Amino acid sequence: MPELPEVETVRRGLQRLVVGKTIANVNVLYAKTILAPAVADFCAQLRGKKFTQIDRRGKYLLLRLDNEMTIVSHLRMEGKYFFKPQPTTPEKHTHVVFQFTDQTELHYNDTRKFGRMQLVQTAAVATLPAIKKLGVEPLTKDFQAASFYAGLQRHHKAIKPTLLDQTVVCGLGNIYVDEVLWQAKINPQTPADEITQEQCAQLIPIIQKELRASIAQGGTTVHSYKDAFAKTGMFQDQLKVYGREGEPCLRCHTPLVKIKLAQRGTHFCPHCQPLKK
DNA sequence: ACCTAATCCTGCATGC
DNA sequence: TGCATGCAGGATTAGG
Image 1: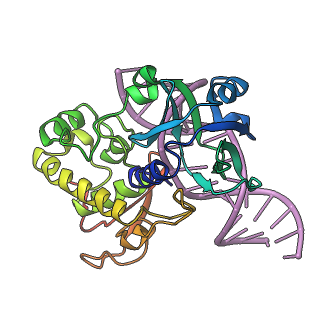
Image 2: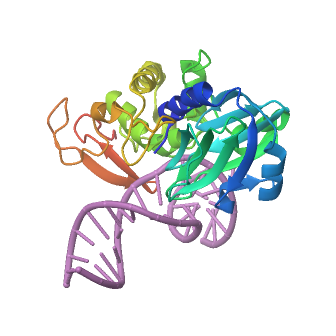
């Protein structure tokens, strides 16, 4: 499931592989992947346009074109971009094919069909509700303890779903939230507004170090994640709690537990991460 | 305005 | 072996 490190890895791959290429034609094989505009308009407006830059905001990829337009793309659970050096028959779960004028192709493949992309004016990207609600980018200097603490103070729900909802800080998903809360020894059920300033100050470098380490490893492949080179990540070997229920905590050897919290599988150590009070 | 639950999808694991 | 069931989950939407 792509989170910030995986999306960033894909971004870097696409930046190398498709920037400078001109779109000759677009084929949409599963219409629901395209949120807007209508599929025919999506294809027509892209024809003849060139990719100029690939950006990222949270878990969204922003594929910039030379006509002041941007494809806003979210991979959700299993979305993948595969670069093809020559014309290639679409694979089973390929839903969108970008054909370039140099005969290379970019295939969007998504087994569960959850991913979505839309073509919008670049100036309008920031006004999209999904983009507008995004909190601070965790790998920037704007991610500071004081504002992080203030953001958490506004939420009464548990810290885990608060970190998942993207409004306080963006880019974290189910895997990395479990990992950073284990590292910070914070119980995932702790109300967000009970997280102390000290814990906020501890969490920031933990989150940044975790995300940077994962990016350095090409991300985490738990189910099917692959980057634009069709390479899996390596960071899954570094996970301390996710998917390790029943196995001993690497700090205290207490068996790790898995619970359901806000509809999400949640892994933690009941000894290292006690629920206070 | 808040929280929870349902929704979208497919592949895989499990159970009978 | 085959079929039914359950589970995984990011973001949106519906319902309480």
